[in-house]
Amino acid sequence: MSDFNSRLKLYQQRIDEALDACLPNGQAQKNKLTEAMRYSVIGGGGKRIRPAMVYAAGEAMDVDQNILDTPACAVEIIHTYSLIHDDLPAMDDDNLRRGQPTCHKAFDEATAILAGDALQAHAFEILAASNLHVNDRRRLEMITLLATASGSDGMAGGQAIDLAAVGNRLTLEQLEAMHRLKTGALIQASILLGAMCSPTVTEDELAMLGRYADCIGLSFQIQDDILDVIGDTETLGKPKGSDEKMQKPTYPSILGLDASRKLALDQHQQALSHLETLGQRADTLRQLSAYIVEREF
Amino acid sequence: MSDFNSRLKLYQQRIDEALDACLPNGQAQKNKLTEAMRYSVIGGGGKRIRPAMVYAAGEAMDVDQNILDTPACAVEIIHTYSLIHDDLPAMDDDNLRRGQPTCHKAFDEATAILAGDALQAHAFEILAASNLHVNDRRRLEMITLLATASGSDGMAGGQAIDLAAVGNRLTLEQLEAMHRLKTGALIQASILLGAMCSPTVTEDELAMLGRYADCIGLSFQIQDDILDVIGDTETLGKPKGSDEKMQKPTYPSILGLDASRKLALDQHQQALSHLETLGQRADTLRQLSAYIVEREF
Image 1 (cartoon, helix red, strand yellow):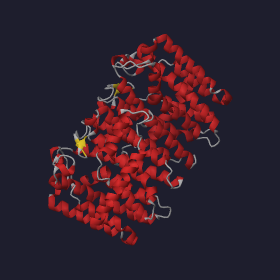
Image 2 (cartoon, rainbow over the protein chains, first blue to last red; image 1 turned 90 degrees about the vertical axis):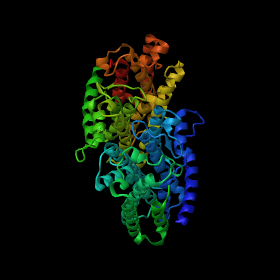
Image 3 (cartoon, each protein chain N blue to C red; image 1 turned 180 degrees about the horizontal axis):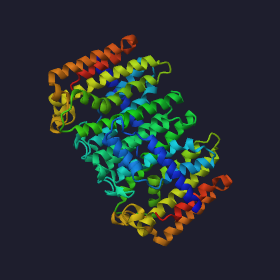
Image 4 (cartoon, helix red, strand yellow; image 1 turned 135 degrees about the vertical axis):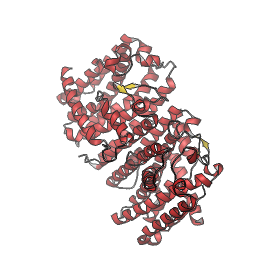
């Protein structure tokens, strides 16, 4: 656990530098749009857990960190664009994100919509255009994976189901299906994009990592829901209890806190079981899974 | 002119079928999000001028129409997502688009935001994943081009400048610079994506076509501004005079109607000059340029 904390710090430092370098810097033509993009991606920091997944999965396949920077930036940029749009008044109507005013509060709604739009385009641009040391066919597969994980069969589709579910009682199965799209798809993409940078990764290994990612995606969401109940605003960077206020279905609201904790730990154990054949090189991925269910913010 | 009208009808029929086939059909899991995506892309029709550009440029380079369907869909999907977001209350706040209620009026704001987001992802997904008969390197270049044309250095950047300009008096140069990003970048991408599907197109030919696209992009915008002054709501599919109502800077407001018409025709002549070396095979592109400055809706 402590091992992963120090590693996460290194990843965070690395990704912050990589994001700063890869975003349009707006110096040539300083304008509100590029400022808003940088504000949301870089300003508040954030846990950078998805980039950490890219790095950890890539390293398990012996991929050089330099190669992993681009997919790590791409997933964090997609994640950030989704936060900007989710925070809009027409969606979750949040004022605070990563401890700072949300994009539409710091700028305005129109700029926040456009910043999200431009960030999404940028994520695909860097995957397609960069000097990624990955062959062309594989890069196309990576773009396909990220696009599918982001669109109507992934993150955007899950967010639509989530919005429709506000105020409704979901079954555990429905809640799980929603989260598999809303947060699970991008988490799985993060793990797989890292591994796909290896020229030697096998289909079997990718399948194992996909199942591992499924498990940590669910445990991540369960822990998020738990922290929304028990965390405090300062460490969360957003108001505590906002799910309940919004009448959003959550794991604690369906299962209660104790059963939610147990389910998260079950997912962690399952995640570990999928790594068995990978041996020692997957140790960081094991620590990552533990970190997800043990984190307090 | 009449030649291009009949050809445009064929292109429209073709792209409508291709769009219908390429969008998520929502039958397996019927939901509001995929309905909203299909409603906006297919529902109102639209001139399909950008897909027509892909087809016309591709045919000038002897590319089979079957190969052009995917980039034609991609540019129309990007264009439609931008219309959905531009129409939102926080942006242009329009109720009518392509003769039908705008997406957020027919559905709701949150769904409209997500439908736009999911459509953008889908455009990149089909360019990367389809059985496009174009080699991998070229496909990556096409994705890069479309992403750049859509993002902060293209369409989204132009829209941000446009929003900032509302109520301000722009110079002709500033207006032109704004439109080069807001509409010009995607029009140029449409022409180039069509031509890039040819395995034999030369860098010189692409450069010529890029300059041609620059000219028709400007004449298209000038004619749009003119029609907003003189057209009627029924043929435009949106309220006449909405630019003036919004205090948007336009060519007629800066130059007057007559000088605007002259500038559009100048751009048309310049567009033709860039096609000279391409000979007879570029005839459809010539007709397209004429159509753009002669159209009445």
